[in-house]
Length: 352
Ligand code: ADP
Image 1 (cartoon, rainbow, N blue to C red):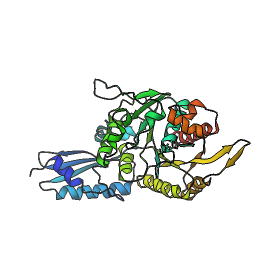
Image 2: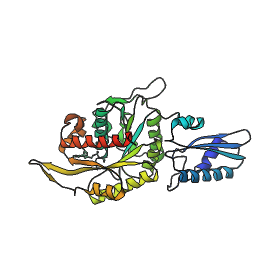
Image 3: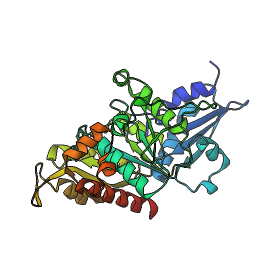
């Protein structure tokens, strides 16, 4: 069997990312493999964040794996971390990153489980950001339950294809939006497994015309399994926002969200406690689910607390009706709470 980049890639698929069951190829860390005439192999690795320890371990495993590949006469590893200053990146790293759009900040919105209002927070956060900054996008990576089209009233729209075979995002409320929901029936994605999801999200990053986007809010699928990890690796995330409800069961799952980002060396921008309390006429706030759990968890894990979103029927109506509450009723307590979360996120992104 002759030595080709494919045979090397096959071998590298056995190298796991430290701390994960997933391999470095499907994680997207291996950006390029070249085999020269003398059968020397050059592997380009791009890590999502600088972490000398992880980089060293992966490089050593790659070196060993390549040298074990029949026919390989030598190995040369080029290793780069994504948030290194672009001007300092060597040409090969720039080559590896060429396909990524020129987006300044990628913000993932995650939750330990479904139903806590992750998509609601992602959409209202994105619209709030768009009121404060230009160049905001929303990428609905919740492949198994895309809700951005309904929540923004854009269902039925189809992204336009460019002559370069890229897709133009749908535009609404000052946002550029992409969702699998525009492209196929929701039922069709239900059976998708990890690699297909990873491929779709990769396309959403690379093949969508995200021109002039400085802030891309990414709605991750609920949960913290391999698929979510893989998606979190697809884009060079600047940080993650974790949505939880105050109940203990939800908080336990939210903790997994913190650990997921920490393992990937992605900063946790903070925790949002959704459905925190109910405002009743007269100014009373009723703690239906035990308000304060999100804040306590943030303190315990030493991550910022971004705010409490009240339970408000208008939040749900806004989602179902395609007009997010921050758009329809910007002065409501829920909208002000979303605006505060947006301020906190901007503070994190813009002040380091
Ligand atoms: P997830 O993305 O976590 O699965 P969704 O954002 O789809 O959750 O929200 C689940 C349901 O809860 C939706 O019907 C949504 O409108 C509703 N919801 C979310 N947050 C609130 C809130 N603060 N007040 C009232 N309803 C909410």
